[in-house]
Length: 314
Image (cartoon, rainbow, N blue to C red; front, top):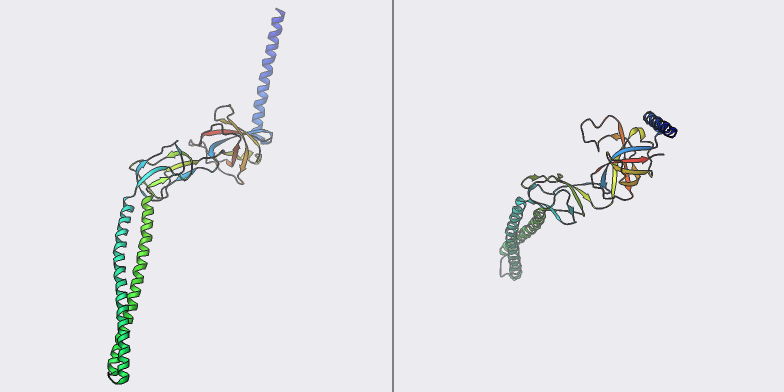
């Protein structure tokens, strides 16, 4: 009986000790909010991102989505098609330019024929003029006839120069049309939007039958490579966080450590809360400092996952 009473007394003393310790810990926590220098570890919200950052995908040409080959969450290899855009206008433009080139080539051929004709006429007139000059020298022909032939020679020379200029302009027009044809072919070839590198599609907003606008994002892409954490630390502790400090990572609402790492980057300025607050009223007037964490191992973390970082600041 005495032994039982003794155990009860020890139990009550232990319970009292635990209660006292809990009250002391709570007091220290309340004090740390007003005195951040007493805090040894700081928690912050972060998101998992590729080291190269997320990439917004867009099409070089506007059009209607004809087919979608990948969906959100799919892995993509470099060169694989992601969507197909109906570019009938560009294909029509290619055909029109091709016909214009044929027409212009026919004109250029005619201009070249004119040049050759004037060149032959000039050669003939020059020979005729040489004969007339000899006849005039012997008195067998008149100087008036010589003057007429010289005028005719000048007219042929002027026509020949004009024909050469026209032929050059025709060749230049063909070169211009061929450049337009190349650009039209490039535009028509852009009906397939392909991946520029390996990675994963994080989101896909394009829909078959819907329009996409040139250079307007239709999907978010995560390039393959190492993952990092991109987070925000409250301004109260902004000056306490340093590059190289150890970090443990857990999912929001859980205490299980899922990854570890070190602070690898700190923004030189404070900014507004913006990155990780999804619900109205979740952001406040307090400022934050952006930081990044280099992970020791990603442990299968998913891109864009929301996690909690615990930074050891002392």
